[in-house]
Length: 105
Image (cartoon, rainbow, N blue to C red; front, side, top):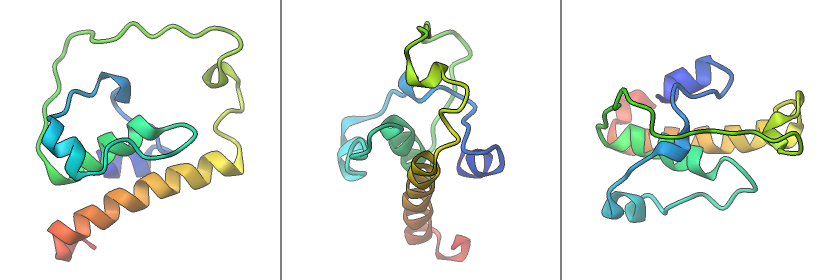
């Protein structure tokens, strides 16, 4: 998932709000990142580099956008802050992966 995110402009193949994670794993990873957005993405990417997971091919979320929602704005990912936040999320996952797989660093 980390490579996919990097190669696709920090987009994920699943919505991170559908994440179901064991409590011990979430605690070991520090839980949700303290970010103004993308904290679920941070936890999902971190978990994806330290533990195997699986995808259930059934809808797990009904995602509705309203016009005032930040993700409904055309340029919501164009800000420098968003880029920095995504780079921080990626850096966390890379650091975790390098601790477990030093050759992957």
